Amino acid sequence: MASNDLVHVVDDDVEVRKSLGFLLATADFAVRLYESASAFLATATGNLDGCIVTDVRMPGIDGIEFLRQLRSRGHSIPVIVMTGHADVALAVQAMKEGAADFIEKPFDDVILIDAIRSALGNRNQVHAAHPQSAEIRARLSTLSEREKQVLDGLVSGLPNKTIAYDLGISPRTVEIHRANVMSKMNASSLSHLVRMVLIVESQA
Image: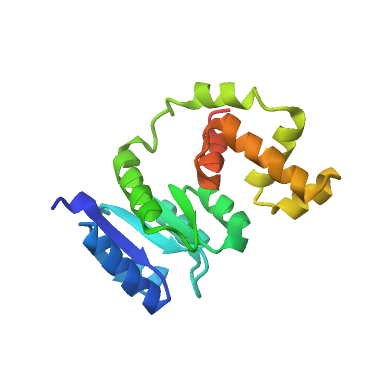
């Protein structure tokens, strides 16, 4: 097995670490488990192989600060952030700090494994100009004014109810606009949608 197939799991919950370790081992990944970001950073020297899966909420150094410290040390290893359903704002912040992806818990095992494989496959393209930026801009141009307002709210990490209140419309209407945005942008998930918007913003 190539060292590139290594996954570092960083989570303060011992049961989560064990279950993820078992899941990833059965998917043929080499796995290393850490109980905290501090524990990982203490061993992180030289070039880091593979990718990191971490929780966004941890005591001590949380997922966001973990990302910042990795980047400040010059590590470009891809990081996938796991978040609770109510942590979309944190997840969006993590994407802005350079996370490769975020996954909302509870998640399907296949979704996590696919995200890891994607992160590993794309890790050498982190600094390259994104080939899809023109295509993403074209999709953005198809959104109505209201859909763009809903998209702005989603990318800011706001829940549907807050977006509805801010725009003076019902949460149900926000859900309809949100579905339209996902469809027009060809986004498979909220993290995919956020990632597309950040790609365009980073090249503005």
